[in-house]
Length: 435
Ligand code: CUA
Image (cartoon, rainbow, N blue to C red; front, side, top):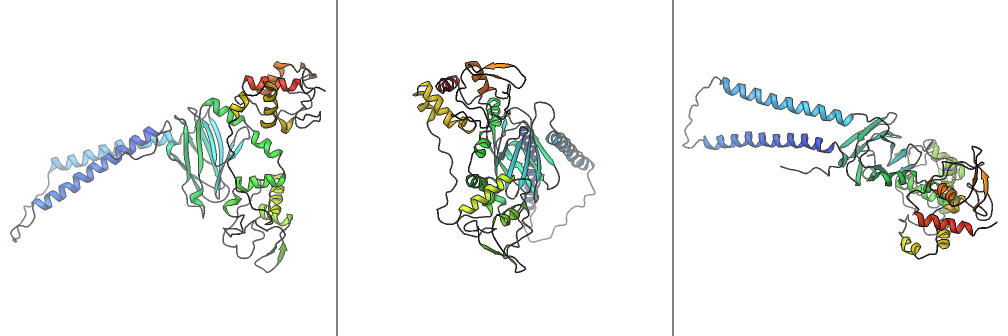
């Protein structure tokens, strides 16, 4: 009866649903039985002839009383027993080497997730199917609630303290994560996506740090524009001049700001930086009601510079671009039609090799590709190498295994992102880059 719970996507879900359904069915049974018999007797013994009938006086019935004491007691004990057992499974701290530990932080009004290798992401997180997962929760501002219905886990997220949820996903798919504690104006938009994927896909995803490399190579204003959405500034600050919770960013730079005490200041770099790090220090008149959370410790100096540069560009001279999903191109077909050298060049341009490896011999984050083919050199551990096909393939797939002297092992692995044909293309392309 009444099977309405969401998809069962974790190991725990069937247990939770079983006890939930059991209690619900039992309640429905007794509600119908008790109310039904009340109605039945009320109708059966109703006053028919207008005369009061004296009812017999019954002192008690031992058999009946024993039954309605013992039966509900047994039922209650069963419910309590399974309630405790399943609750224990629910709150058990998953430990051991194969546990995926994710640090999550709730803030008004978004979820930030950080993995052990430093990868961080907002409003989305990815876990491998079949591996126990522990999400350690905390909040930077107010009370939030972390709830993944399909995993049957839910926990309060408390500022200044850590809580956690554990679950083992059993099904690949995309699931919703909600905030279940009313935390302010945009509470209902505080959602995150949980993607459960295969182990291989997870490894590829978690080791793909190209997003961070892209940020490194962005202009400050572009980085600021990206952060504006990622860090949730957009929840309170519009780009079109309208007042949401905080002042709009449009034409903010250089504007005169007036505070409650009547003092005034121009919105310059220092003002913006202070507003980001210590938002309570200078509250503009008319915005006293909602306290902006501090972004201290959440943004690097470089990122703050980016935001300032971005705000500076919002002078109203250009229409504001809304964030767009990157268009998926049919790159696979295009690639298949290319010659290996062309394919290598395309990969160099599009797979971010270009960010760290120059073509003109200059040293960026990684060695230049110019003259790299068959070059001899020394590794950090003193061993010698020749940049032949095997060396290049290994460098692409396992970049941190062996590091050339003078460089840091920051390159992400392209395992799962480039196939043999791609790698062969890169090698053919390198052969053309002679000194
Ligand atoms: Cu956070 Cu509601």
